Image (tube, rainbow, N blue to C red; front, side):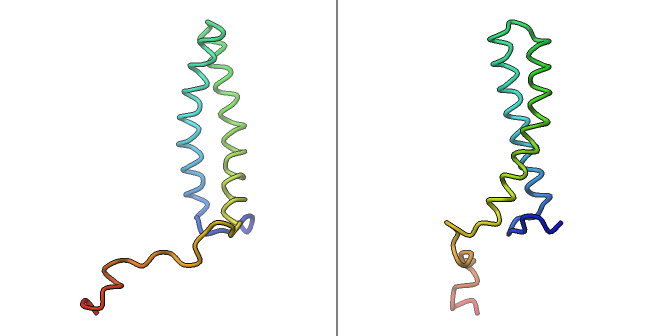
Length: 87
């Protein structure tokens, strides 16, 4: 996919989106249950928001992945590779 090419693979962005949404959905479920006193309503809210927010997070991550601002020009060297005694 050519959209939002960055230094991170699309599969990594997707895995991060899923893991974040699991945590976020647990939070949403518990807060919704607290405020509504209904586990059924809380479940409906959590299921609905997981779908929309996972998609939004994925595109948000890909957009930020294509922005160079705040990134180092070069990744740090591996300490073993930079040691003159090992070369």
